[in-house]
Length: 342
Image (cartoon, rainbow, N blue to C red; front, side, top):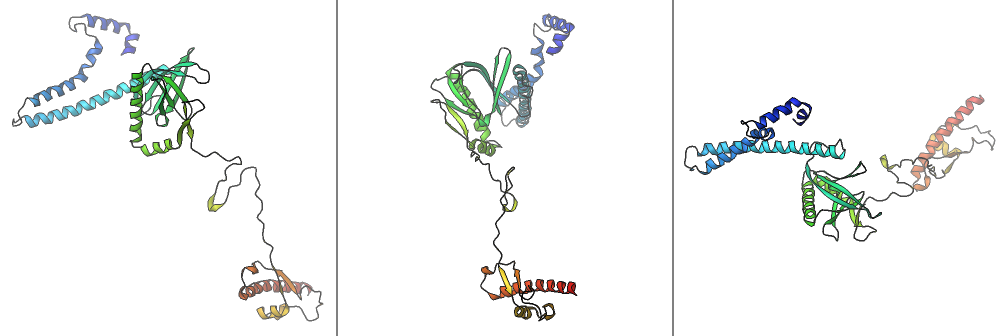
Protein backbone atom coordinates (compact mmCIF):
# COMPACT_ATOMS: atom_id res chain seq x y z
CA UNK A 1 0.00 0.00 0.00
CA UNK A 2 2.74 2.48 0.97
CA UNK A 3 4.88 1.57 -2.05
CA UNK A 4 1.93 2.07 -4.40
CA UNK A 5 1.10 5.36 -2.75
CA UNK A 6 4.66 6.65 -3.24
CA UNK A 7 5.07 5.42 -6.83
CA UNK A 8 1.62 6.36 -8.20
CA UNK A 9 0.59 10.05 -8.11
CA UNK A 10 -2.91 9.21 -9.28
CA UNK A 11 -3.43 6.96 -6.26
CA UNK A 12 -2.31 9.76 -3.94
CA UNK A 13 -4.82 12.12 -5.56
CA UNK A 14 -7.62 9.56 -5.16
CA UNK A 15 -6.84 9.05 -1.46
CA UNK A 16 -6.84 12.79 -0.82
CA UNK A 17 -10.19 13.27 -2.58
CA UNK A 18 -11.78 10.32 -0.75
CA UNK A 19 -10.62 11.58 2.62
CA UNK A 20 -12.10 15.05 2.02
CA UNK A 21 -15.44 13.77 0.74
CA UNK A 22 -18.62 13.80 2.84
CA UNK A 23 -18.98 10.01 2.47
CA UNK A 24 -15.96 9.15 4.64
CA UNK A 25 -16.18 12.15 7.01
CA UNK A 26 -12.44 12.77 6.96
CA UNK A 27 -11.51 9.16 7.85
CA UNK A 28 -8.24 7.91 6.45
CA UNK A 29 -8.19 4.70 4.42
CA UNK A 30 -5.99 2.78 6.90
CA UNK A 31 -8.63 3.23 9.61
CA UNK A 32 -11.16 1.61 7.30
CA UNK A 33 -8.95 -1.32 6.25
CA UNK A 34 -8.86 -2.53 9.85
CA UNK A 35 -12.67 -2.68 10.17
CA UNK A 36 -13.09 -6.31 8.95
CA UNK A 37 -10.63 -7.49 11.60
CA UNK A 38 -12.34 -5.48 14.33
CA UNK A 39 -15.76 -6.85 13.41
CA UNK A 40 -15.11 -10.34 14.86
CA UNK A 41 -14.23 -9.07 18.36
CA UNK A 42 -17.34 -6.92 18.24
CA UNK A 43 -19.43 -10.01 17.49
CA UNK A 44 -17.84 -11.69 20.48
CA UNK A 45 -18.64 -8.77 22.78
CA UNK A 46 -22.23 -8.68 21.48
CA UNK A 47 -22.79 -12.41 22.12
CA UNK A 48 -21.22 -12.18 25.60
CA UNK A 49 -23.67 -9.47 26.55
CA UNK A 50 -26.56 -11.38 25.03
CA UNK A 51 -25.74 -14.58 26.95
CA UNK A 52 -25.38 -12.56 30.13
CA UNK A 53 -28.91 -11.16 29.76
CA UNK A 54 -30.52 -14.49 28.75
CA UNK A 55 -32.00 -16.80 31.40
CA UNK A 56 -30.52 -20.27 31.66
CA UNK A 57 -33.90 -21.91 31.15
CA UNK A 58 -34.49 -19.99 27.91
CA UNK A 59 -34.62 -22.19 24.75
CA UNK A 60 -31.92 -20.07 23.05
CA UNK A 61 -29.46 -20.13 25.95
CA UNK A 62 -27.57 -23.27 24.81
CA UNK A 63 -27.47 -22.10 21.18
CA UNK A 64 -26.12 -18.69 22.19
CA UNK A 65 -23.35 -20.32 24.25
CA UNK A 66 -22.34 -22.49 21.28
CA UNK A 67 -22.24 -19.43 19.00
CA UNK A 68 -20.18 -17.51 21.59
CA UNK A 69 -17.59 -20.31 21.84
CA UNK A 70 -17.30 -20.50 18.05
CA UNK A 71 -16.83 -16.74 17.65
CA UNK A 72 -14.32 -16.65 20.54
CA UNK A 73 -12.27 -19.36 18.86
CA UNK A 74 -12.27 -17.44 15.57
CA UNK A 75 -11.33 -14.23 17.38
CA UNK A 76 -8.37 -15.97 19.04
CA UNK A 77 -7.15 -17.27 15.67
CA UNK A 78 -7.46 -13.80 14.14
CA UNK A 79 -5.51 -12.26 17.03
CA UNK A 80 -2.79 -14.87 16.67
CA UNK A 81 -2.53 -14.26 12.93
CA UNK A 82 -2.37 -10.49 13.50
CA UNK A 83 0.36 -10.93 16.12
CA UNK A 84 2.40 -13.11 13.77
CA UNK A 85 2.04 -10.57 10.96
CA UNK A 86 3.05 -7.71 13.25
CA UNK A 87 6.01 -9.76 14.52
CA UNK A 88 7.23 -10.43 10.96
CA UNK A 89 6.89 -6.76 10.01
CA UNK A 90 8.75 -5.67 13.16
CA UNK A 91 11.64 -8.10 12.58
CA UNK A 92 11.90 -7.01 8.95
CA UNK A 93 12.00 -3.39 10.06
CA UNK A 94 14.77 -4.11 12.59
CA UNK A 95 16.69 -6.18 10.05
CA UNK A 96 16.65 -3.29 7.61
CA UNK A 97 17.63 -0.68 10.21
CA UNK A 98 20.66 -2.56 11.60
CA UNK A 99 21.75 -4.15 8.32
CA UNK A 100 21.21 -7.86 9.10
CA UNK A 101 19.67 -9.74 6.19
CA UNK A 102 19.19 -13.10 7.91
CA UNK A 103 17.40 -11.86 11.03
CA UNK A 104 13.96 -13.16 10.03
CA UNK A 105 13.76 -16.89 10.82
CA UNK A 106 10.91 -19.34 11.49
CA UNK A 107 9.89 -19.33 15.14
CA UNK A 108 11.77 -16.14 16.03
CA UNK A 109 9.70 -13.67 18.03
CA UNK A 110 10.41 -10.04 18.84
CA UNK A 111 10.29 -9.29 22.60
CA UNK A 112 11.51 -5.73 23.24
CA UNK A 113 14.12 -3.10 22.46
CA UNK A 114 15.87 -0.53 24.69
CA UNK A 115 18.45 2.23 24.42
CA UNK A 116 21.49 1.37 26.54
CA UNK A 117 24.98 2.79 27.06
CA UNK A 118 27.91 0.41 27.25
CA UNK A 119 30.97 1.18 29.38
CA UNK A 120 34.35 -0.05 28.08
CA UNK A 121 36.58 -1.10 30.98
CA UNK A 122 39.80 -1.10 28.97
CA UNK A 123 39.45 2.33 27.36
CA UNK A 124 37.04 3.99 29.85
CA UNK A 125 34.85 5.02 26.91
CA UNK A 126 31.13 4.63 26.26
CA UNK A 127 29.15 3.35 23.29
CA UNK A 128 25.43 3.84 22.68
CA UNK A 129 23.58 0.67 21.69
CA UNK A 130 20.15 -0.49 20.71
CA UNK A 131 19.49 -3.65 22.74
CA UNK A 132 17.11 -5.99 20.89
CA UNK A 133 15.74 -9.03 22.71
CA UNK A 134 14.17 -11.89 20.75
CA UNK A 135 12.99 -15.25 22.05
CA UNK A 136 16.26 -16.92 21.04
CA UNK A 137 18.89 -14.21 20.56
CA UNK A 138 20.08 -10.92 22.05
CA UNK A 139 21.57 -8.22 19.79
CA UNK A 140 23.50 -5.06 20.67
CA UNK A 141 23.59 -2.71 17.69
CA UNK A 142 25.58 0.52 17.44
CA UNK A 143 26.39 3.02 14.72
CA UNK A 144 29.53 5.15 14.59
CA UNK A 145 30.49 7.32 11.64
CA UNK A 146 27.86 5.65 9.42
CA UNK A 147 29.34 2.24 10.28
CA UNK A 148 26.95 -0.22 11.89
CA UNK A 149 28.25 -2.80 14.35
CA UNK A 150 26.16 -5.71 15.61
CA UNK A 151 27.07 -8.23 18.30
CA UNK A 152 24.78 -11.09 19.25
CA UNK A 153 24.58 -13.99 21.68
CA UNK A 154 22.07 -16.81 22.25
CA UNK A 155 19.64 -16.04 25.05
CA UNK A 156 20.25 -19.40 26.76
CA UNK A 157 23.98 -18.57 27.04
CA UNK A 158 23.50 -15.16 28.69
CA UNK A 159 23.70 -14.29 32.37
CA UNK A 160 22.59 -11.02 34.01
CA UNK A 161 24.21 -9.56 37.14
CA UNK A 162 23.59 -6.23 38.89
CA UNK A 163 26.12 -3.43 39.39
CA UNK A 164 26.40 -0.92 42.20
CA UNK A 165 24.50 1.69 40.16
CA UNK A 166 20.77 1.06 40.29
CA UNK A 167 20.25 1.60 36.57
CA UNK A 168 23.19 -0.59 35.41
CA UNK A 169 23.57 -4.30 34.76
CA UNK A 170 26.07 -6.79 33.42
CA UNK A 171 25.13 -8.89 30.41
CA UNK A 172 27.57 -11.81 30.55
CA UNK A 173 28.16 -14.02 27.51
CA UNK A 174 30.80 -16.69 26.79
CA UNK A 175 32.68 -14.15 24.64
CA UNK A 176 32.37 -10.80 26.44
CA UNK A 177 30.85 -9.08 29.45
CA UNK A 178 28.84 -5.95 28.58
CA UNK A 179 28.39 -3.26 31.23
CA UNK A 180 25.26 -1.37 30.21
CA UNK A 181 23.21 1.48 31.66
CA UNK A 182 19.49 1.78 31.02
CA UNK A 183 17.46 4.97 30.91
CA UNK A 184 16.20 4.49 34.46
CA UNK A 185 16.00 2.02 37.31
CA UNK A 186 12.41 1.11 36.39
CA UNK A 187 13.38 0.31 32.79
CA UNK A 188 16.26 -1.84 34.01
CA UNK A 189 14.05 -3.78 36.43
CA UNK A 190 11.44 -4.37 33.73
CA UNK A 191 14.14 -5.56 31.31
CA UNK A 192 15.71 -7.93 33.84
CA UNK A 193 12.31 -9.32 34.83
CA UNK A 194 11.26 -9.94 31.24
CA UNK A 195 14.64 -11.45 30.30
CA UNK A 196 14.60 -13.77 33.33
CA UNK A 197 11.07 -14.89 32.45
CA UNK A 198 12.15 -15.59 28.88
CA UNK A 199 15.11 -17.66 30.06
CA UNK A 200 12.89 -19.59 32.48
CA UNK A 201 10.43 -20.26 29.67
CA UNK A 202 13.23 -21.68 27.49
CA UNK A 203 14.46 -23.95 30.29
CA UNK A 204 10.95 -25.27 30.94
CA UNK A 205 10.32 -25.77 27.23
CA UNK A 206 10.77 -28.73 24.93
CA UNK A 207 14.57 -28.34 24.68
CA UNK A 208 15.05 -27.52 28.36
CA UNK A 209 17.36 -30.43 29.10
CA UNK A 210 19.65 -29.52 26.20
CA UNK A 211 19.76 -25.88 27.31
CA UNK A 212 20.57 -26.84 30.91
CA UNK A 213 23.37 -29.09 29.68
CA UNK A 214 24.87 -26.26 27.59
CA UNK A 215 24.59 -23.76 30.45
CA UNK A 216 26.10 -26.33 32.79
CA UNK A 217 29.31 -26.41 30.74
CA UNK A 218 30.02 -22.80 31.82
CA UNK A 219 30.27 -21.05 35.16
CA UNK A 220 30.26 -17.38 36.16
CA UNK A 221 33.38 -16.26 38.01
CA UNK A 222 35.11 -13.04 39.09
CA UNK A 223 37.22 -11.14 36.57
CA UNK A 224 40.33 -9.04 37.17
CA UNK A 225 38.04 -6.04 37.71
CA UNK A 226 36.31 -5.88 41.13
CA UNK A 227 32.59 -6.62 40.94
CA UNK A 228 32.75 -7.64 37.26
CA UNK A 229 32.04 -11.24 36.23
CA UNK A 230 32.99 -13.37 33.27
CA UNK A 231 31.88 -16.75 31.95
CA UNK A 232 34.48 -19.53 31.97
CA UNK A 233 34.35 -22.82 30.10
CA UNK A 234 34.35 -25.97 32.24
CA UNK A 235 35.99 -28.09 29.52
CA UNK A 236 39.44 -29.38 30.57
CA UNK A 237 42.39 -27.79 28.83
CA UNK A 238 44.27 -29.91 26.32
CA UNK A 239 47.66 -31.27 27.42
CA UNK A 240 50.78 -29.77 25.77
CA UNK A 241 51.58 -33.04 24.05
CA UNK A 242 48.09 -33.41 22.63
CA UNK A 243 45.40 -35.85 23.62
CA UNK A 244 45.71 -39.54 22.93
CA UNK A 245 42.61 -40.76 21.20
CA UNK A 246 41.51 -44.29 21.92
CA UNK A 247 40.50 -46.24 18.86
CA UNK A 248 38.71 -49.48 18.18
CA UNK A 249 39.64 -52.51 20.26
CA UNK A 250 41.66 -50.37 22.66
CA UNK A 251 44.34 -49.37 20.14
CA UNK A 252 45.76 -45.86 20.02
CA UNK A 253 45.73 -43.83 16.86
CA UNK A 254 49.20 -42.76 15.81
CA UNK A 255 49.72 -39.05 16.22
CA UNK A 256 50.85 -37.31 13.06
CA UNK A 257 54.61 -36.76 13.01
CA UNK A 258 55.34 -39.15 15.86
CA UNK A 259 56.86 -42.64 15.86
CA UNK A 260 55.60 -45.65 17.73
CA UNK A 261 58.34 -47.67 19.36
CA UNK A 262 58.34 -51.37 18.42
CA UNK A 263 57.18 -53.73 21.10
CA UNK A 264 60.00 -55.65 22.80
CA UNK A 265 59.63 -59.38 22.38
CA UNK A 266 60.89 -61.87 24.97
CA UNK A 267 63.77 -64.12 23.85
CA UNK A 268 62.59 -67.50 22.66
CA UNK A 269 63.69 -70.57 24.54
CA UNK A 270 65.91 -73.12 22.85
CA UNK A 271 65.14 -76.81 23.24
CA UNK A 272 67.58 -79.63 22.46
CA UNK A 273 66.22 -82.77 20.85
CA UNK A 274 68.36 -85.96 20.94
CA UNK A 275 68.13 -88.91 18.59
CA UNK A 276 66.43 -91.10 21.21
CA UNK A 277 63.76 -88.44 21.93
CA UNK A 278 63.07 -88.02 18.23
CA UNK A 279 62.65 -91.79 17.76
CA UNK A 280 60.36 -92.01 20.80
CA UNK A 281 58.07 -89.14 19.78
CA UNK A 282 57.83 -89.70 16.05
CA UNK A 283 58.76 -93.30 15.33
CA UNK A 284 60.11 -92.22 11.91
CA UNK A 285 63.59 -93.84 11.93
CA UNK A 286 64.17 -93.34 8.22
CA UNK A 287 64.25 -89.56 8.66
CA UNK A 288 67.27 -89.69 10.98
CA UNK A 289 70.91 -89.72 9.73
CA UNK A 290 72.90 -92.93 9.27
CA UNK A 291 75.15 -94.27 11.95
CA UNK A 292 78.29 -93.24 10.10
CA UNK A 293 77.56 -89.55 10.27
CA UNK A 294 80.34 -87.47 11.82
CA UNK A 295 79.76 -86.08 15.31
CA UNK A 296 80.02 -82.51 14.05
CA UNK A 297 77.09 -83.03 11.69
CA UNK A 298 74.26 -80.73 12.89
CA UNK A 299 71.71 -83.35 11.85
CA UNK A 300 72.81 -85.76 14.56
CA UNK A 301 72.00 -83.36 17.41
CA UNK A 302 69.51 -80.72 16.40
CA UNK A 303 68.68 -77.45 18.07
CA UNK A 304 65.47 -75.61 17.32
CA UNK A 305 63.60 -72.61 18.54
CA UNK A 306 60.21 -73.24 20.09
CA UNK A 307 57.27 -70.77 19.74
CA UNK A 308 55.79 -71.42 23.19
CA UNK A 309 57.21 -70.11 26.43
CA UNK A 310 58.24 -73.25 28.34
CA UNK A 311 58.65 -71.29 31.57
CA UNK A 312 54.93 -70.61 31.75
CA UNK A 313 54.08 -74.21 32.73
CA UNK A 314 55.82 -76.89 34.79
CA UNK A 315 53.97 -79.72 33.18
CA UNK A 316 55.88 -82.06 30.87
CA UNK A 317 52.87 -82.57 28.62
CA UNK A 318 53.19 -79.16 26.96
CA UNK A 319 56.95 -79.80 26.59
CA UNK A 320 56.36 -83.05 24.72
CA UNK A 321 53.82 -81.45 22.41
CA UNK A 322 56.28 -78.74 21.46
CA UNK A 323 59.00 -81.35 20.92
CA UNK A 324 56.72 -83.33 18.59
CA UNK A 325 55.91 -80.24 16.53
CA UNK A 326 59.52 -79.11 16.27
CA UNK A 327 60.81 -82.63 15.52
CA UNK A 328 58.37 -82.95 12.65
CA UNK A 329 59.80 -79.75 11.18
CA UNK A 330 63.37 -81.05 11.60
CA UNK A 331 62.52 -84.39 9.97
CA UNK A 332 61.10 -82.64 6.93
CA UNK A 333 64.37 -80.70 6.61
CA UNK A 334 66.35 -84.00 6.83
CA UNK A 335 64.32 -85.54 4.04
CA UNK A 336 65.00 -82.58 1.79
CA UNK A 337 68.75 -82.75 2.54
CA UNK A 338 68.90 -86.50 1.84
CA UNK A 339 67.13 -86.07 -1.47
CA UNK A 340 69.55 -83.32 -2.51
CA UNK A 341 72.56 -85.49 -1.62
CA UNK A 342 71.19 -88.47 -3.52
